Length: 152
Image (cartoon, rainbow, N blue to C red; front, side):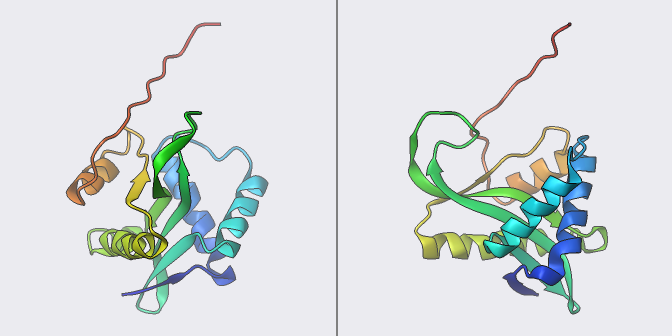
């Protein structure tokens, strides 16, 4: 399996993956126009790695580099440089075949080259398959964010 930076030709595949991720997590992308802009920016910024199998894109991992406290919490410098995984997507026919594991191994190599000591990301609790996958790779929970609906 080949790993490479996403290019303009991967745009439709990445946008499709984003919509599938949102659907699986029970969310809707509020603005497709804004999401298209985000996808283009991530591709241009070399923040999306693509797994290629049989000559076509079969998965991707979208990440950012940081050292500020993640999760949108304003605690300042986290004290650790990390790569934050925004999204991971593998086509249904390729799931369970090592694509996700290969994407994370590729990202870990990038992290080492950049001097980052952690890979981090979030997984919605409804996505139990993703939780099990990340735990299998050795990821550990760091924080829980709770929410509660309030009546109007």
